[in-house]
Length: 232
Image (cartoon, rainbow, N blue to C red; front, side, top):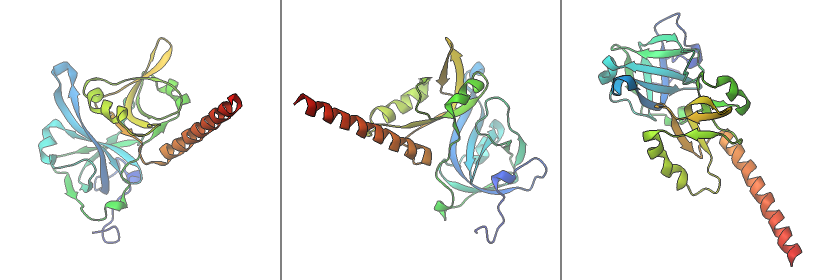
């Protein structure tokens, strides 16, 4: 059933003032939130949902088994959920609110019209704003400037080959949900349990940066040719 026959709420409309929301979204990311103080006991399963914009959703440990069939990348109709204010610290996305799943939350897989919702969207942080986010927040990062980043444990093992064995001359990575710290008066990023790394993601910002890098590479190649010709 499409929006002409069924009214879906936009994610921009979501707030705490009513409880009968009905959304059609793509699950772009899923991860387990673990308590490292209690031997990595499961706290919740969290998701990033995409329509035109992004929203963070969370499934508490006691409800996780109700939603085991949810898959990353699929489109779902979701209703009968709760809405709360988003966290001030460690925000996953910039939406003012976030979604809480309950045992009564209805989730239905929508197998048709896969092109209705983009496959991915990320909120990128300008490099010059990172210093204001340091030691406070999580953010997505993608810029031309240099910065140190630490990949921890499973994240490092899972993503090393994606970067090292990419065929691109200039692999461009987008890393989501990193913590930003200051160390020795320099900014540094660290992966978290909710981080995800994309190589050469098909989004406008990556395409623009690719063009810039190709122009730089072409310019360097032309300079090298001129130097060789002068040496002859």
